[in-house]
Length: 372
Image (cartoon, rainbow, N blue to C red; front, top):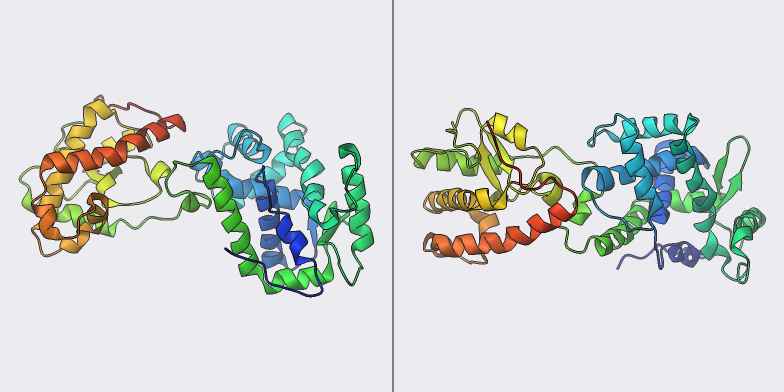
């Protein structure tokens, strides 16, 4: 378990309590936005709109690109999806571009702008509630914001238990980080970011219990390195007389092919070799992030995988079979060489079939087929 660095002059327990019993993602993204702003700007005063834009840019990839769920109550994720619907942003847009678009959307006279700005009605105030637990007991919900704002202002210069920040209207509408807290945040930026992300991963995993690789889906997708996959299939090209596309039947040539993730990369977020096969480039472009028709394509997919595995197992580069060894739960290359196609196919099916259903439930286009 990750804990926060101790400081005898600050109520660290109150900050930690802000992440207890979380039912919405905004607390994580609000705090991460504060830390990011401090890291980049070294300023104690931060515009609310700046923080909102950073929050939406951060939740953009898990919601719009990776299709993760943040729960039915989570408005931040829902607003990120609305930004996607009302802008020309591609799903894999760069983070700074997303921030710029959100900042422009906020300035418009639109329902979307109202939705984004509505976050400011709750987020800055409710994040501070644990700092004033005793004072807020019995306070009606409709006066919580005003009470929190007053308490935050009164505790700002408190030397014994200052609040993290106070709400300000001049020179900008936003927050001002308390000086001692600013020093603390600056000193422990890496640890605090890790603490918040650890809690965020647990929250997202709870809302996506069967989705693979959740922790890798919280950030902008990175450029992938397919060297191992190309080395693996390069051996197959050398030994197999003929490689044909499982989707189109077209011949595949070693000099000009693409690598296709049978389960879309946007769903698995990994490059494990048992999910990758070669295809002609035009076929890969046509398939994109769709789920191929299982009844039509799984059998040829398994057959092609099995053939390639046997080739590599008999080569001097059997170390390329690490992914398959973990999949098949076998401890040796000899065991892979003696594995029947029936056993290989059953193991592959047991792994892929449930993930296909989960991906379909998340909204990935299902039962894709290639038609010339």
